[in-house]
Length: 117
Image (cartoon, rainbow, N blue to C red; front, side, top):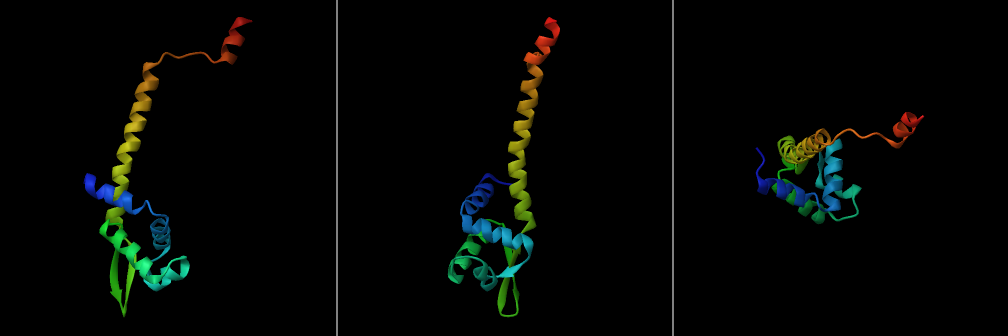
């Protein structure tokens, strides 16, 4: 189950456009820092710092491959974030359903015109 702190950490990490771009690139395929830096308008050290934030937020993980570290999305972290956001969506849908069911049906202006004839 997602904790409030981990969800806030993930949301905070995604508040930066560069980190969102990194996440989108990693959604396509795993990549090393040098590969990501070639795709983005930031330096390799900056990419490394962004990856550190994403990793601490549980959104990416890394593994050594030769002399590089290859980063990929962390499905568990993304699932936790989705669960957190789904709670808001489900609450909104439930509230909408409740509101609609509480209101009496009203005729549209077109329906009222057709009954006046």
